[in-house]
Image 1: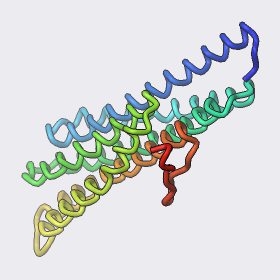
Image 2 (image 1 turned 180 degrees about the vertical axis):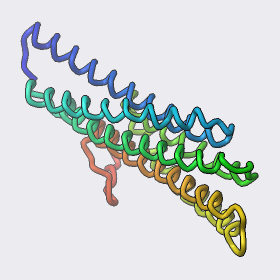
Image 3 (image 1 turned 180 degrees about the horizontal axis):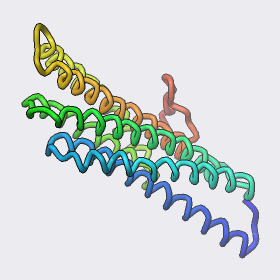
Length: 230
């Protein structure tokens, strides 16, 4: 990074603005996901519509963050830690945008389900959402706090989410067996549960980027931290 009083001040201000935009896109994404599920469980079509409308703000923020990240890397001579933070943030933003897209997909399927009578099986979605959302919350906290420990908790939780998703999928598949007047509703629930499982996968991606940001170690695809880093 370049030195000099005013340049250092400009750099610190730019980095803080960049981080604040990251906090904003994380908050918006999580709100979209919550509104999509609440729309389904509370039978509130307006919440579903709000998710679809609010996704545009997430999309635009992703573009802005990418542009500002490139500007930071081209304008300042970044130290390794700052460079990892900017690169990881841009990758995290892409994962958040994909989570928001899944929230939109959930909201659209939920609107279809809400056209019909309420199904008791709608509630099967809630435990998967709670676990996936908890993973997302921890992934965002890990980023904001620079905590590899919290990030590793997210990664470890993925097996539990996968098991819960498989169990719920089996229950919904049973509902689809034979002749069923609510066939499309059950099928929509299968898709919603799958997208929630993907939210967990994307949260793991975010956590892995946090670990790289904090330790310079890439743990994707079977990579591991050294004993000193754990």
